[in-house]
Amino acid sequence: MKRHLVPTLLVLVLSCSSAFAQGPDGEPATPTTLIENAQSRIVRVDILASSTRSMHNHPDMLWHVFVTMNDPIVLTIQGQADPVKLGPWQTHFFKGGTMHAITNPNPRVAQFLEFFSKKEGATASIESLEDAMRTLAVTLARAAAEAVENQSSEDRRQR
Image 1 (cartoon, rainbow, N blue to C red):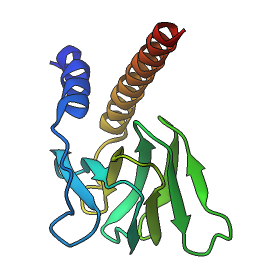
Image 2 (cartoon, helix red, strand yellow):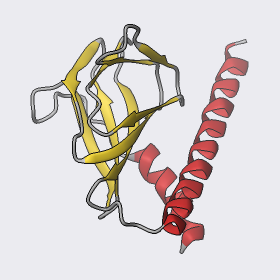
Image 3 (cartoon, rainbow, N blue to C red):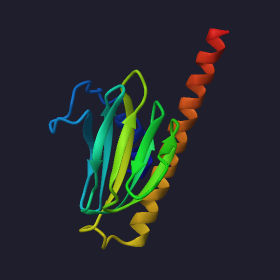
Image 4 (cartoon, rainbow, N blue to C red):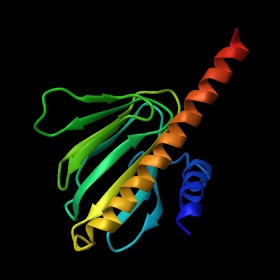
């Protein structure tokens, strides 16, 4: 079962259809929940070109990890003087309840992932957390390697 989880998650993350309109709350970001259980939630978000998702937080979460996918993103974090600029496949860790805004400065839709740990599910065993983090690390490493290879192939074709 575990052996098939990583490829399945990777295919799911990379092949979900993109939504190119505002989300249901009028924001320029459209979330798609990929996985949700008592302990965690994984969401892929498409954010419109040259737009900003307003300041918000996730008070029901212990923490969450933000991972860019295809383009740079800028995070504005309440209480921090300088914004956090992330390139493709870079990450940022947030404590639960941290107020933040997300800006897509690119001329096309940008995608990112958010990995959440729920407060209510915090009783999960350390072993299950370690397994989840190992799976996440392998998934991200494979996706990053694929992105680098795709970029290298594109660079060779342009020469």
